Length: 325
Image (cartoon, rainbow, N blue to C red):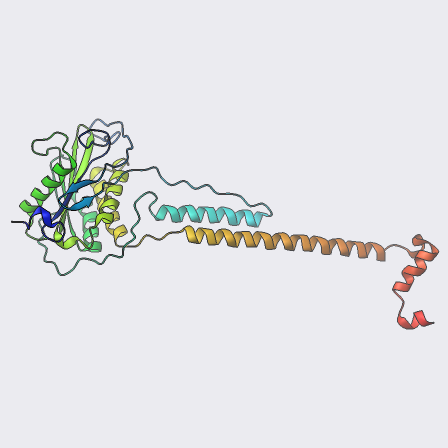
């Protein structure tokens, strides 16, 4: 099928892009997955993503892998109850931060599911690496992506880009666009090209022009972050790409909540509780001290105060009539 030219970007034809990791002068590749069965394993290096590359007029940025979030919580002395509150609050905050995706790029845009586009199902993937042992596992996540976004995903796994051993970002984008033209007659597909050779990988994509409201630059960043996160994980390849698509679809269609305002509000509430508890404790101690003094005075024989002291003390407890007499 013909395209409306590379110069149109999303407005005409497809948008395509290529991504590589840092390291090589040609654009670079990230290290292989450590300990993967059948591929010898690699160093499993954790590198940040590559630079932006131009593919036509569309400005593209690659994603990267970063370390997981850390939480440093403080304590609050005073009572066991307050201590438990702090512990449970810390656990809750860590859980919320984990659910927000850690170092995965946030989704800040409200996206609407793609509709009104006729899409022909041409399958979900081509595997030229021999990685996919359970197609159903892979397709499960890709179907979830389609249900969430309305964009039909397609995965192309290869170790060959014509004429190149380590293709540049532009080359990956061009090859993804060529594959898109060969396989699809509609503009509702998203083709992910994943390239690995010598235990190093890179990836590119081509998105149909109708998908621009869903697969924008931010969505691509999120996809790249999930690729980096799961590539270095322990999942088999079919489960890995299934998770990449499923999690990407879910995240880009939901504005990522920030839990820091809730955290700050919780800290303020906890501080107020601690201040009120401290005030109540001191007030109670003062009352108890006054009560003990009063009881000690009442239980002390008047004779022990001497005649004058006894008389003065007795007067305190006399009625007005007794005083006049």
